Image 1 (spheres, rainbow, N blue to C red):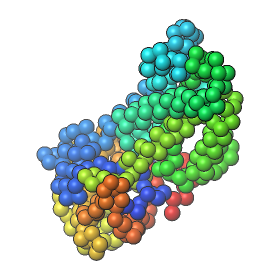
Image 2 (image 1 turned 90 degrees about the horizontal axis):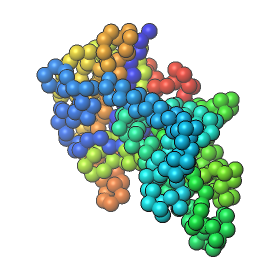
Image 3 (image 1 turned 180 degrees about the vertical axis):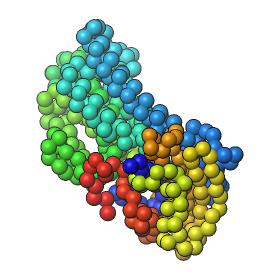
Image 4 (image 1 turned 120 degrees about the horizontal axis):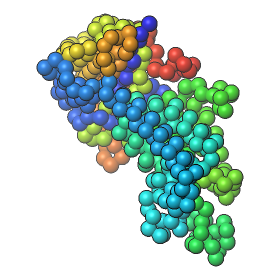
Length: 395
């Protein structure tokens, strides 16, 4: 049975919960009909066109596999040209002082040990897949690279701090600025993706060491505590714990950047949903019926149809913000539906949310919008994406 995937967007400030992903997408709460559709490259006028959700998701998969291939290629190069890799694919203060600044990035694609490579690629696939499908291939690549660079700088910066604090490095005062432990591996970059994904789905059940089930948030806390302890203990086990923490901080920054709206961009992502409908038209019809039950005052503002896709924009009365704008986009990558299930996305945007400069603190709606979206999903019986494989406790 094919089923739709629903990606929920909401701008309400109190929704940084288990049902909120991250970030701002469009400027202005009174953005007209092309707003949300343009963000997903969906032509609301003229009956379709554009690249749509299909190419967006497809692009993220290509980026994900490209990153994995690049890491495997780096592993192979260690066998073919180890001296080259040692010079240009490991990061250290020595290398940065010598002008090899690119090593801060190339180190994130460098593995000498097959276990190190395998563990990182497993994490990259599972956590990167979620991030890529929700934010797109470009942001997946951006977060990976930013996490890798941040991890490299954190590794070097931590050793530099330790040297300034104690007067000598881990290998003695005389050798501190002549040679420092080099770092390599995708761990920091993968940590950025992992932390972002855990913040998106904190209550999702994951398996520690593929055996012990626990909430994703608890696993994240344990990882962070281990890295903090390791960094304070002098990078025990020759592991760059400070680099891991740099990557984790990057994931947190990415999540906050897309979760806390600014004065000009005020829509936030929420986790994707699943539905059993077999076509965009069927899913749209059921969604509209459920929304009408939850918000009887809703009124249609705009509508468009294209090849294997449907778009609607509604206005819903709200006592606090005058009205909310709810946009729904349902599309498939390519027919037939049985081979490629519909992807259903929608965004709900309170029309008059205000923000306080410079911290961009949004005025609360006391959870009204979050409750409205939850009730719609409850009436439809749709589930959060991924719960068919992992047991989820999001309520």
